[in-house]
Image (cartoon, rainbow, N blue to C red; front, side, top):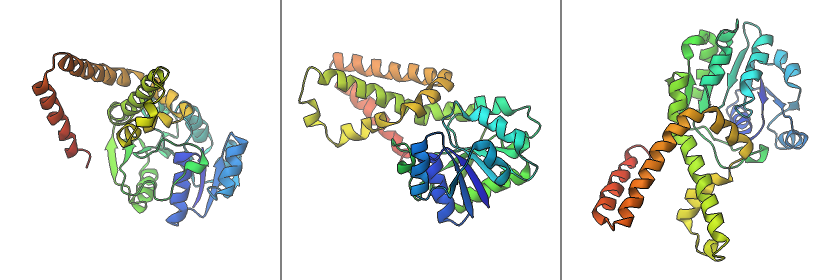
Length: 280
């Protein structure tokens, strides 16, 4: 199989490595707007060749979109404009409703499969790509009823080979759940980092005391703005809804601390501990 991957950063690069490691791709064509990232992708063996997007589409059995989410809808339309009845287009972005709406009436909508592997790190660029990134991680497939059976079968076969269990959702349902389990974590981490950086202006030794708990909580603040600003704005209504509840919970805890409410805090923390049922 010949695969074209647009965006050779963390997700696209890791997907390229996965396709190579599992023997799925015979050749990988990369698309990169950054000359530096293009050279790095070639050096690291993520791509065999770097090509222009439009040039690479006719050559590929599978076209993969792994660019920032604000660019994916237009790229999806451009790809669908050029593919034939045997080629498949797949995205790996973390926002689906806008994308699926944009392509909903396209004559070749069936050649598209909307995919979101539930994996990522705080790093970006080709050097962030990792072997085995998707193994054991759920992959969400959205609006599968809109994809042609053979296109869907290709996507399912790839992720089955990567040992990534498939979960099926509607696009809007996906975006709501993504806001709760992913996007809120990032915006909270960014806010915490800004809080500590502001305090650090007054207390110079604050980072001398930073331990593992702080590091694990704030690590997502190292994530790329180029990736996360479009995600936040494209999923703004779901994120604002989650933020309202998050701020409400913070206000409750603040009031309990103000009142020295040890029993209330203990009850809240015990309830929070039940997250172990979800995250092992």
